[in-house]
Amino acid sequence: DVKVTQSSRYLVKRTGEKVFLECVQDMDHENMFWYRQDPGLGLRLIYFSYDVKMKEKGDIPEGYSVSREKKERFSLILESASTNQTSMYLCASSGTAGYNEQFFGPGTRLTVL
Amino acid sequence: KNQVEQSPQSLIILEGKNCTLQCNYTVSPFSNLRWYKQDTGRGPVSLTIMTFSENTKSNGRYTATLDADTKQSSLHITASQLSDSASYICVVKSGYNKLIFGAGTRLAVHP
Image 1 (cartoon, rainbow over the protein chains, first blue to last red):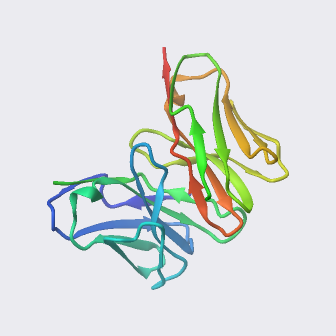
Image 2 (cartoon, each protein chain N blue to C red):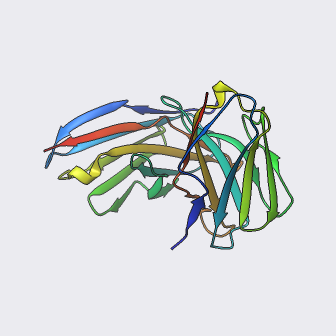
């Protein structure tokens, strides 16, 4: 079974703090993604990566950065957290064969006070 | 503009009843359509995937349909169970490899 794990299920931070969200997958997938999920909206893509040390902006990259130093790990960084970044953050990974199904982690619910 | 719209936003049904969730999309070019189930506090899990040539696909009590001409899909749940309580998300993949997510339908199954 594909397993995508995220470092925290719940996180509370203060405005201006630097926040790291970690994601690890165990299926040797090339592709990894970070989304945010807000009530009434579909998942929105923040950043994705097709290879180690490679990153591409998604639809809403402002206020975020990412790091992919190893194939299995993809980190999302909030350089200076703001209250409008309070959200559920979902990490996903996919291979390159077949339908490229994305497998999701359990999510991190981040609250910025 | 590429969009995926789901209806209803939320739905309450009694255990054992059937229900149908709708998904309309304007994504072009179309590659495939997938239904995900997302339990509260969990990540989405794929239920079915449908390509342009497929009209119907089943996964247990879940049956998805696709009408590529009208750009509509539905997810039918038969003999609902309490464990079906979740959000159901319709996701369309464009020919440019981009995923467009619907906002989801929140289903509550009551005993």
